Amino acid sequence: MKNDFTIINPNINGDYTVSVAKDEEAAEVMSLLLETAKWLQSIGSQQWSGLLHGNDSHDTVGSIKQEEVFVCKHNNEIVGVVILKRQPSAWDSELWGSKAYADDGAVYLHRLTISRKQANAGLGAALLNWCDSAVSFKEKKVMRLDCIASNPKLFAFYEGNGYEYMGQEGDFKLFQKGLLNS
Image 1 (tube, rainbow, N blue to C red):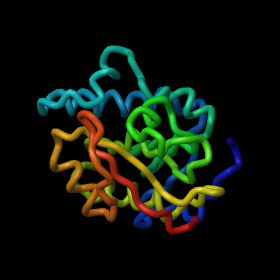
Image 2: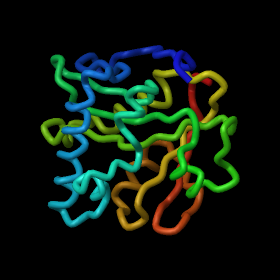
Image 3: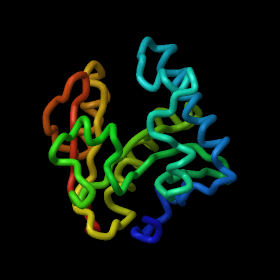
């Protein structure tokens, strides 16, 4: 799977850079994900609560080794993370059903997160839009993601950034958007 993508533009708003996470950044990436899981818990959400108990359903460290984790940095500090899987995971296959197969032309977006220090600065939307416009994936045409159905603010965020609602599977809403550089 390595070398099946090209970063067209590593910059976001001139202040941030995005790159593939390196093995030595795994601890910092996991720390940011845990920070987000704790924050979500503090506002009454159970999203990502598995991380608080050592259960990483998206195998972030393994995804780093597969070059599927991208980090957004500001002054050499990781302030954002996103996982872009070029093959559907078991989770994706369960949610997307028959649409999720190895050569389905989709990239699956997971764990988009921003440091709480950068919250409310528009970086989340900027990183989300970077995913479908500033990186090109070989033979991929759409970006897919899911979010918990009980968070209307989150799915409004995705729809507000051009993602089309594709239906609901269990407790999760499904969204997709065409890739600009396919």
